[in-house]
Image (cartoon, rainbow, N blue to C red; front, top):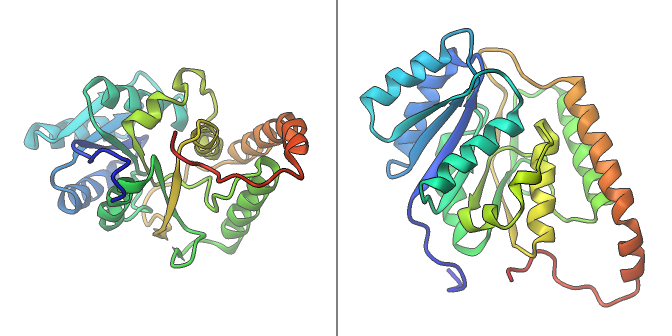
Length: 259
């Protein structure tokens, strides 16, 4: 630890759910085993398969599991924003994003949280050395790799897995990046918050993780999600070009330093 960051105390792991009854209990057990001092918040969008009821049952048996019920499905970004606000209102020091489908390995959680000792945002990355993909179709890998290359080129950032959804934030960082203005969803939500963190002068770190394709249930990824990410990244990149051109030729500064 460098000494420039205060120690992390309470941690909330936020897991959004929509029709994840088959996966939730196993994921919850793995999270509680991996980080027993952390709390788990399930944010359920009124899943018709009974995921919310199962979450309530798990919460009744474990005081460190909580449930936030929302009236209907309104997107991953909105679910995370609701979870962030829940955690910030209750004074947590760090907030972790994690999928409910088992693709993010709970056993990586301690490394993710520990890396906040020297960062404001830690991204669990599939595309840094040591990162792994298990059972993902080649087409999905190509889309993810190409999308992240496009993000780096258009936005001028160095993060290699800006679309990754397994990540940890310091609570103070979330308070500095104007969450009330975020409207993006899906992959684009992760890119949006990564860019906001960097532009706020905060430090982003990446650590390698193993990503495993879900074994049960249906992926929520769609062509609309990919199109939204492409369109918004293009808009953000074009809007930033004048400033980037003005800086061309100047001595490069260090990206993502803590203020």
